[in-house]
Length: 120
Image 1: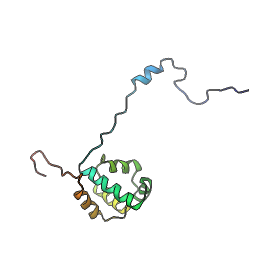
Image 2: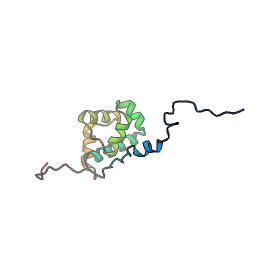
Image 3: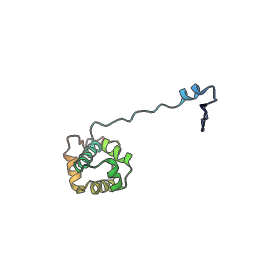
């Protein structure tokens, strides 16, 4: 004899107007993925160095102590790395930080930030 029971915490099970709640919840917006720029160039260099070593983002997380989602954001160019982060990432991918920055500057994705006056 099989009798299915509703077990667990389901606060909306007996609520008649659950559609009202669901329909008024905020929709998640997609993140804008940059096509070029300083952050995108650094992220591509970082990803290439990581893949050259054959390590995953999770392994890089263990090596650097940086959150895996932050590593993903860096690689996609969404986050801007601090100087400390650049050194931690460089150590994690076994690369000289200066070489990592040089490769970023030489990347075709690199665009130097320009101020309103037209100078750096």
